[in-house]
Amino acid sequence: MLKNSFARVVAIIVAALVLAVVSNGFASRQRRLMLPGYYPNALRVPPPERETPPAPQAAPPAGSAPASATDTTASLPPATATAIGNQTPVVVSTATIAPAIPPVKETHVPAATATQPAIAPAPVPAPPAADVLARFTPHPDRAYVEISGADAAALHAKGVLFLDARRTSVYEEGHIAGARPFSVWESDVDEKVNALFNERSDPREQNLPIVIYCSGGACEDSHMLSEKLWGIQFNNIYVYKDGFPDWQKRGGAVKTGGQP
Amino acid sequence: MTAREALTHPWLTIRVQLALGAIFVAAALPKLSDPPSFAHMIYNYRILPAGLINISSLTMPWVEILCGLALILGIWVRPARWLITLLLVTFMIAISINLLRGNAIDCGCFDVSAAGKTHAERLHDMWFVLIRDAGMLLMCAQLAWSERVRRTEVAHTDREVGPSP
Image (spheres, rainbow over the protein chains, first blue to last red):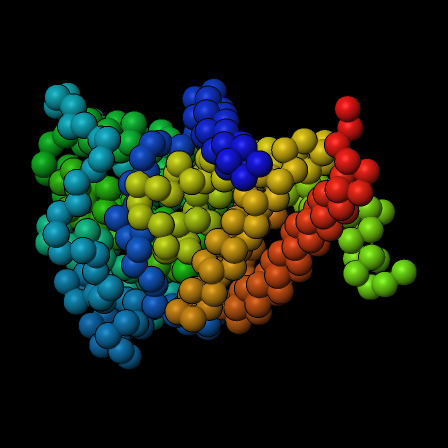
């Protein structure tokens, strides 16, 4: 009797495994999972999440020091910002480096139709527009640098590429205008990463800033995506730590639907 | 009727079996409909190595639905009950580990969408999940006890009457 029951337990598990693999094979791209997945920090317990106060409406004066080593909302030059990714290069599991193709001349995301008012000007004088990009220099030793909403707004105004690491269904409900959907949880993320690499195959283009965001708070999707991109030589990645909720609070340009 | 007779009565047992089966079918459906979100939930537990997260998130809902259907249909009840007990104990250990670590997570038991709760709310919910899982473990125990009593009674009757020709 026991032996018979044990065999049936094994049969149920095997049946579940077969059904899982078959159903995953027939699933749509947004619902399919890669086997195996790529999760560099799968066993690393995140530090306790702080109850974050409302996002600041303006950037502090340029060059002001953060309150603590973990204060990631201060508007600082990237070289002094904190919360950096792994120090060792990350190898992308399934991404392949495709042969270089002629670089795309216009890499800026086209200005999308905004459904909300444009970003309100910060009361604190912003650095001159020409200096904005100069502050965001490549950092090949780090996967990403976390930036504040003010920095994200400044980069958005300069037409820097924004990537949305949240699920596509969430992206379609509302995203930063011009941002592209790059969910790390969907099976086509490596295709998108490869396409971006082909689009920016020139090393100079790979050093252009890219801003990645997700839902803020404890969300790590943007960090995971930045490590993927860093693994294929994108050396100027910025994680908008407070993410889309902060962007909405700031009144940044938002677009709905599946297009950037 | 003694308490033992009441707790192992077929009237109660069949209802517990159907309820437990329905709970596990209901728990499996949202996971089956959105495996990436469930994989995200499993990732948040920070217990499984990277290579096992996706295959677990794909397989576990199918185990749940097969076991749930087995209980509802009354076939392979014992192995289904064993597997459900194993799943519940695993969930409780995983939740407890994260409670001890202070890692507030959404359980992902019946809903795989990010709930947008605060750290304190998540910790509170984790305690509730532990109690709920303990309740379901008691349901498994009732099924096991009931089966044991029934088998004892059958064996006793066989001894008295003798094997049928």
